[in-house]
Amino acid sequence: MQAATAFDNVQPMSGILKALRALADPTRLRLAALLGSDELSVNELQEITSLGQSRISTHLGQLQEAGLVQSRREGKRTFYRLNKNGDKSTMEFVDFAIRGGRELPEHSADAVNLRRILGLRREQAQVYFNQVAGRFDRSYGPGRSWQAFGHLLLRIIPPLEIADLGSGEGLLSELLARGAKRVIAVDNSEKMVTFGAEKAKKNGLKNLEFRLGDLETPPISPASVDLVILSQALHHAATPSTAIASAHRILRTGGQIMILDLLEHDFEKARELYGDRWLGFKTSDLHRWLENAGFKKIELSVVAREEQPPHFETLLARAEK
Ligand SMILES: C[S@@+](CC[C@H](N)C(=O)[O-])C[C@H]1O[C@@H](n2cnc3c(N)ncnc32)[C@H](O)[C@@H]1O
Image (tube, rainbow, N blue to C red; front, side, top):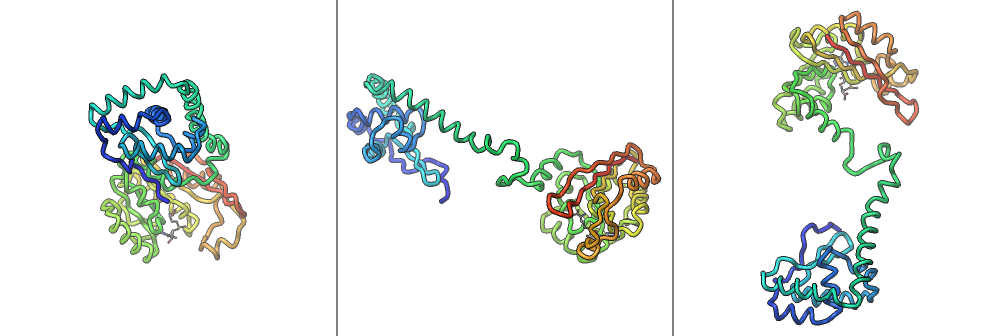
């Protein structure tokens, strides 16, 4: 059942006379006093007052009929609270009556129990997070995804001109295009380029352009981009060192290359299953190719390891022209 967000079942606030009749009963006055400080469910009211459920429901119905109480559904539960939207004179009367209700013998016990119930409610909200702390980042959380984090992080980067080489359909290119000045996605598969271009158009990304071409000879002018990305693409190149040298050529001075690829592995089936040419790379080889191409400030690290066999590991290489 969908949770209602706004208070419903609101009767227009009746006049002072109707409020007077509703609050003449000490139990209803007691309930109204409790609902004046917080919204509460029937169960919670039961715990606070030790009154029977049907008695509470009956009185709530009468208070609601008089327009003094409003209700809100949340999943299977209904919460009640004092209707504070009445006309001024009725509100003044209700306020006055509730102040009088503090003289009821049950008032002090009700106040203590109310604090306890509200404390319990707060604790329950924390129970889940206390339970999952320590494994939260590895467990499922509704709406939490790397793609969503990517959207957030990519809006932080400055508006760069970016080349995404071996872009595929453009999952990353599209994310980048949200914050970048311009993204040029290059792929040598005609179908990937057509599909990616149509998707970018449908998503209104005018700054994302798909080009058909090889990542070893990208169809991009020399010294024209600020960032070159090779995400799981380099292991498809015939000569990876050539692709890295080409990346250097199309970068402006001070621009950066970012490579996400697999650390060397021995899962031969990757050639057949994923069309891979190289079974990942040694960090030493990547470092040498970057250095030979003229890159400086080279950084290499393993940033992820898959939990399932064959436990692929992802390398991130970053360097500056
Ligand atoms: C594993 S996908 C990676 C796609 C994307 N970069 C990503 O991370 O989601 C590899 C892509 O590289 C493209 N590709 C393979 N060899 C290429 C080459 N020599 N030049 C350009 N693209 C190439 C493939 O068509 C495929 O779309």
